[in-house]
Amino acid sequence: MKNIANLLLASGLIMVFGCNFEKTEINDKKDKENALKLVSEFYTTLESENYNEAYGFFISKNTNLSVSERDTLLKRLFVSQLMKFGKISNVAIKSVTTKVSQEGNSKTGAYLLTYLVTRGDLHQTIEDSFLLIIENSNLRIANYNSRPIVLN
Image 1 (cartoon, one colour):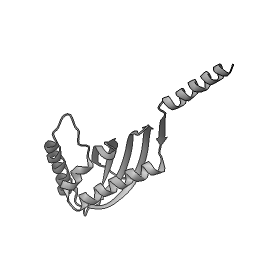
Image 2 (image 1 turned 180 degrees about the vertical axis):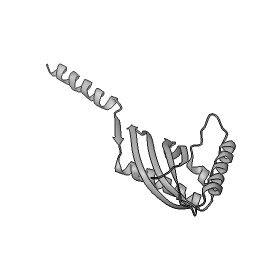
Image 3 (image 1 turned 60 degrees about the vertical axis):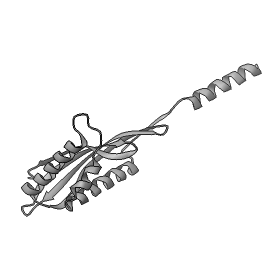
Image 4 (image 1 turned 45 degrees about the vertical axis):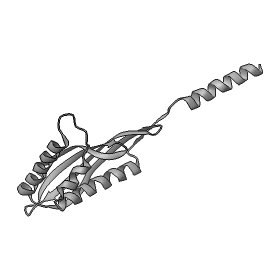
């Protein structure tokens, strides 16, 4: 009987400690804070027109583009936004959604953020949306979409 009890205890310990447990957090306060901080720093670099620094907020891996091609396209986007709509005068958070999973030391996640950005003397409102992911333990912009909107 004692051997069976020891065997069951050992089997239970192997199952508990031998398995990796995944923990998923949705809209965790700390995850939101990290995402908001990253995007705030991104907007600061855009406001100062420091485009070389702004490139560093984006993921480094893209199967379709080299880093040089990516940076050239981003600079064109940033400059065209500035020329067409003017400088950023206000940034307001519209929505933030996060989903982060951790298994052992490995952390993955998706962060979706939307902002209303006012630009230029005409106060044109632009809706910016971001998809952030974790790349090499750092939060990075994987997708950035910017479109003018009409407010009623």
